Image (cartoon, rainbow, N blue to C red; front, side, top):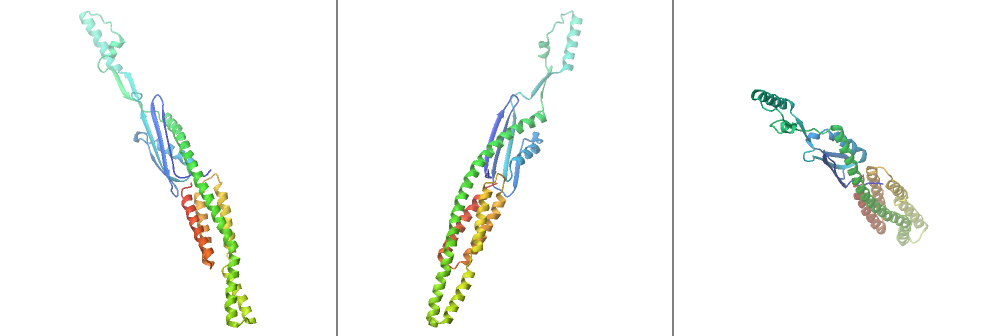
Length: 292
């Protein structure tokens, strides 16, 4: 299913150690432009995030925000300062021997003494953190792509509707073209007969002028190509892969053929139809600018 390049996804996951949040937002862009922001102390996450995002997104200007917040006290490691504790034990033993006092002391009593315990901020395990962030990113990408698919389906539906209108206009131009030639032949015949009194020369000139006009305003090739483009458009819109840039080129070709029809056809009704066709093509062009 084709996706829109506009999307949003946000997932927050908590475990015993930390809270991880991944947020994605994007708008249309000619190529894939990733802007990744991770906490400075976890800069090593950026490469992993980039590769995972590139595997899931083909085009668009994408902002990815990764937040990692340690839970209060979860990253603090408390350890006994054995050197300080040994000093306390030696001092207690010396005082006990010198003054004949009891040297009974509990471990808890020792640990309560100043500097007997150390508190250090423990660094997060890089591999574990990568795995956790990758899992959250996968969920965020799933939510983000689901939104893009929904928006993409709406865009495709609109493009198909407008392509149908263009197809009807092509049918009208095809049906109207022979009438244009016949009407022109009738006008030429009236003028020639008036000037040359219906002579054989007049009839020859009428046939020549009508033939030249018919060749000049013949839009058969353009109609065939336009129908081919419309068929390709329908096929591309059913593609599961990213074909936004191909669609953009195809719509340019549709516009070119329509312009040629407009320049060839010397008829008010066809000219009006061409204006309508160009308006629909422009609306299609605007819509596919948002397709991946």
